[in-house]
Image 1 (spheres, rainbow over the protein chains, first blue to last red):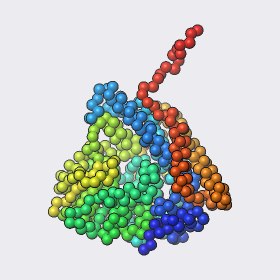
Image 2: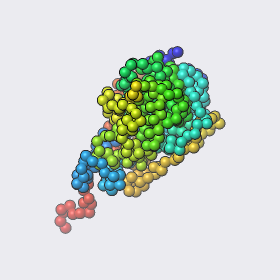
Image 3: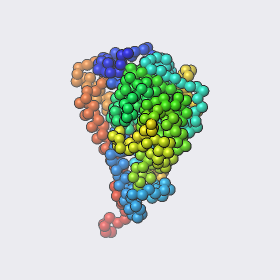
Length: 383
Length: 116
């Protein structure tokens, strides 16, 4: 199967420059071509707005963020707080909540986040029939498979507009499109070709016996890690599951475009219905801080069940055991309350490695760090 | 969410709306609105500047300057780097006054030392 994205990368650029199309079907929409595996946003204007938000994000992180953090540190010191201990969210709000240096960072961050979401939502809805037709043209195409379950009972906890994404993962037909380009603002060009996810796949530990026949990516979203795992382990059967059908449709479409033979299935991570011991590796990427603590425990237990003895569980997410501090309390609470990360505080309250151990995993934090932002826990199902 | 003009299946379910929009981080919702407005204007200005750059690049290469050519243009690696630097400078010039460090003076109305 032709890997259209890499095979046509340079010709897509040339084709785009000449005004020709790199489409493979008449329903395929990429009016401005693609650069590698990233389709360019459909208009120059939209791309430029998005580019500006990348710049604002960069400025917020490099200038407003440090100023906010320094101010929090100063205020905490004046209040006589131990900078190596958490405080309560209420204490954080009272101490930091009215300071201009701290609030302007939060305001700028939110304004940019909302603007990015709005322009993407507007763009994909304005040509909605064509984008839905495009996904329809891919739904039954290979390589790989898309398996949706219209009868799946979608839990209430998954229906929130997580990180303020309009409609969340389950309620907006273009959730995948919006998620992809909005998260690219955070990556600031460092993940346009899924480089981060490829790095995670490279750093994913293997079972001691080296056997990797089946891999499961739970809460796979738009499938970036799923495809990266397939590219790392081309002979393995790789499956990505998620609760959001729009996310899975987009994931499948992208996987077909890059020629990755993976299966995307609409399932619950806490009740996959796969047989016992079915997988050699289970991975996840920033799933657990977006589910309840109760669901996390169930998902960990289900992961234990579907892994074979000696199998590896590699969950990438915020480190629940990161060093405590008043500033950490504040940023976690802000993310929870004002970024609609509804389950963030529940996740932060977990000893995630401890929960993995309770479920029966041998837990290690000594693997190669996949990312400086995320914990690097690995669980091995004991043989 | 914008209106969707399509009868195709969307494969969506009801969602739980958030409550974070339109909230006042800066004590006055109009102040928050002003920040968002300035950001939107900045995005529009950058979009215009970037379009001008595309046009200039096409003209410099003596290529046809048509709407299609403008939309399709792919910046060179050097252009990507240069345009990003200019974007970052524009963002910094626009927003650097919002970077607040240390205690803020609150001496409006106090004597500036002039007599009489």
